[in-house]
Amino acid sequence: MKTSAEMTPSPKAVKQAIHWMLSLRESGDDPALSQRCDRWRKANQEHEQAWQRVISLHQDLDLRTIPGAGVALQTLETSQRRLHRRQALKLLGGAALVGSASWLAQDLESVSGLVSDYVTATGEIRTIGLPDGSLLQLNTRSAVDVAFTDHQRMIRLNHGELMLTCSPTPYQGRPLLVQTRDTLLEGFEGRFVVRQDDDCTRISVSQGRVAFQRPGSAGLQWISSGQDWRVDALSAERLEQVDMDAGAWTEGLIVTRNMRLADFLSQVNRYRHGYLSCSDEIADLRLSGVYRLEDPDQLLQLLPQALPVRLRRRTRWWIRLEPVA
Image 1 (tube, rainbow, N blue to C red):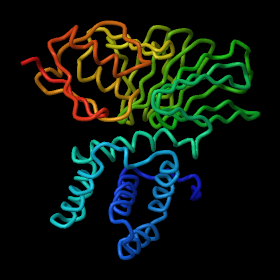
Image 2: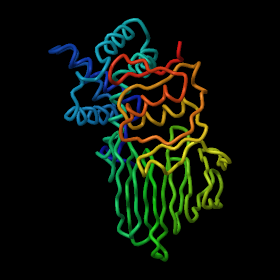
Image 3: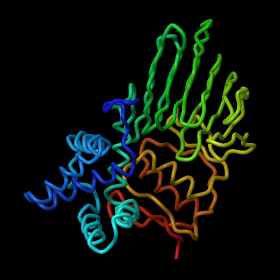
Image 4: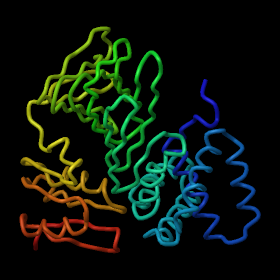
């Protein structure tokens, strides 16, 4: 059973905590609101855990700089007066809070290092040398736990993406394992990328080979060099074609091959704060090329040169691509 320190609050609880903090900031000194917030925190251990996460991040961020916070708060308060609680929580996770809660939630994810051994912030790529000589690289907004014992070498990917270059030194009886939400992998001499998306785990092997356990099966599936796989809670499938070089981020690049614009923007947005999207009319436009990730906003400036699109900005953080009129 997990202790309080080991608990990871759900996105729903984190969004509620964000709401309480925004409400308290907006109201100034409101004893009644403070009491209601205290009751919410005491009602559930997960609530208190989420609150502490938000408080910890708040020490490093000034919420007044978050775009759209005032509008989001006003919308939320109106919704709570007019809608049932379940409907209000649904609205809290919707577009009304794109400028505030979503932006903050990205950084809450990044600071999960409060309970993880290694973590990267938005836009950060980090390299870690492991005790066995293996090399671990973490992509933006990623977090892992590392546990090396007398019996095994375990890396738990809590969220985000990693590249693991396995040590060439044999470790008899101590397998090198990577655990995700969907599967357990064993790495051998070589290099591979593992990314945990919301609905699946993606595995790409560039050198050597990797074994993983199929969902619902006691047997192992081997992934050879040059192969890409998608694994979720119910199935595993080899991807015959991929639209992005899985390991290019280790070089600070995003390399696309006939990639949908909407999917490209989703990847770019992992390296920046704020909201980034495109209209449905241009979502299926295709991109192929090599782009540098060091300055995502400068990268976006290149898109109108390659596609019939224009950038529409509301704030520094809010960008939407639309078709050229």
